[in-house]
Image (cartoon, rainbow, N blue to C red; front, side):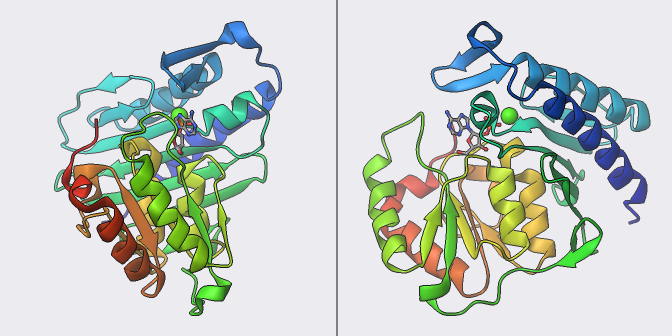
Amino acid sequence: MDMNKELDTAIQAAEAAGAITLSRLGELSNPEIYAKEPKDFVTEVDRQCEATITSIIISAFPDDSLLCEEGTLNEGTSGRTWIIDPLDGTLNFIHSFPVFAISIALRGADGDLLAGVVYQPILRELFTAAKGMGAYLNGERISISDRDSKESFLIATGLPFKEYHYLDSYVGMLKEVIRDSAGIRRAGSASIDLAYTAAGRFDGFWEYRLYPWDFAAGVLLVREAGGIVTGFDGNSDVFRHHSILAGSSITHPMLLDKAQRHFGDLVGQSAG
Ligand code: 2AM
Ligand code: CA
């Protein structure tokens, strides 16, 4: 199915939200920061971006549903759902640490990811993918890393920041990945971690607890770039448990083996 109109709309929405983030970067002060839950922050910039994105998407596709981080909902009749993170990396944004993105994905009625956009406004990097059509960075085809020696792997992860019952499992896995890689990065934006994995900058990525809007677009990017994405249970239905392992045919099995040994029974638990 041709996704050109969907991708063009998602790009337009992501660029409009990106312009908002750039115009507000460095401006935030404490009264403008709200905690949805302890350590889970939202700012008026997140809300402004979400309003801009959703109005662009709803006017182009009024029959589609919306699932957005900051709560905008639209119950459409098409069976398709746009999964939107208007500002991924909010804590970075608040601190002016320049790693944040807009993530927009479209999921079809059958559950398949159809289109995905991750836009990093500071670097003006636009990552796009449509099902079966490959993954692109600013119009150039990207592909997953072909590095094959563990001494060369640069692996991204997300550290636990809110729930700590799996901290020991996480640290057990982290210790092994430290030994089996050149280095680890924790940049604080899962959509960028996945987009960079798709582009071969990172050799793999793992994070235990994420929301659909953090990973939906990035998962399609990695798969369309030739990579493998599953949950920690090895299942490719990443929407079931919200844990993510992404990598190449070399790094994904390595991460999966470690996740299964360290997380054990935890892998089957659904996200809270
Ligand atoms: P968010 O900025 O859209 O909330 C990486 O760990 C992911 O977790 C990010 O994509 C980020 O998405 C989310 N997250 C939420 N709260 C966080 C926090 N306090 N520290 C780090 N990441 C956080
Ligand atoms: Ca967000």
